[in-house]
Length: 403
Image (cartoon, rainbow, N blue to C red; front, top):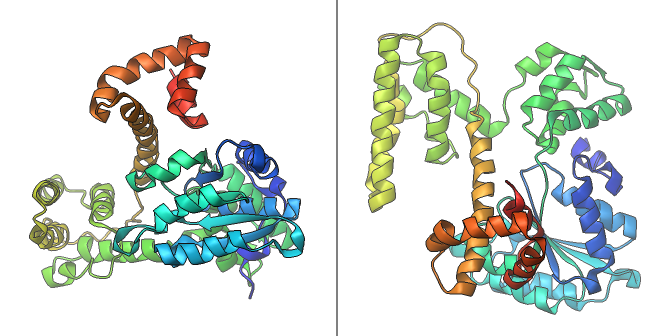
């Protein structure tokens, strides 16, 4: 059984939805690589928005050999040198030219990353072929050197209507009889993850050749979400502390996301004011311990947090609620990600100014950035000169120009 994510992978750049400007920039970069000021592009955005597919489609259209390397499989300097350096040193198949794609560059992190990122930066300088990298968050401090050598291109989070358009086309090709409301619901719940939406459609409709609203209602969240929902059931629907204490044992989500899940679904479950008040007191106490961990690195408090979020929340109610509640992830996760991206651009600009003016980023944010934004809004000639002097990316310039 061929996964539909592979069967219907975009063959042409025009098949990439919602990213027309971004795809055009990638095409121009690849075609005019030798004239480009930056010798690499770092494309970023939420999962499933078409980053990797766009590179594949462009390579196919221009008849370039695509050398794809997953950064998660090549974490250290030697592995990067072997894979990237080897690809750069070999002549292209049939002398057609090539693109080097380093996918999921976020994978170069932690204790396993022994010089991997610095080696990528060195290979960019040596490359006579275009290098394209993908990431979820390029503004991490560890990417500082890469950002200086790369142009950043942000891929949009897909609107549900764009996702629905692709799903509708697949339904037509697979002869699936679908209910329009069901297809809309499936598109919305994907949260912009087109790859995930296509997988869900295949699970629901490949064999039955139909898609109804009840099918979508019965669709469980993806494996991680399903595990979280099951954990919340053990906490919210139980007054047994032993059951509740084990609720989050097999959850891979970090503690911050568990907080968000509990916070978002608690008022849906605990409808009695007294129960809800006690539960939020418990949640607040857990947050106090989380703050102490952040301030003092007292990681022994983590066990207290787990006890409060599980048994503490479970025992906050007088009795179990019998009403069914559909637990859902909070949209705050997406909003937090979007906010982080916005603040990261601000920090990246401040970092460049701080390096040139030999001052702190904090002082730049307080004293310099407001004046710089005024210049970019009112004096184009001076703004262009500053952009060149500070080596600002296109999107950093656009951020400075926003009112």
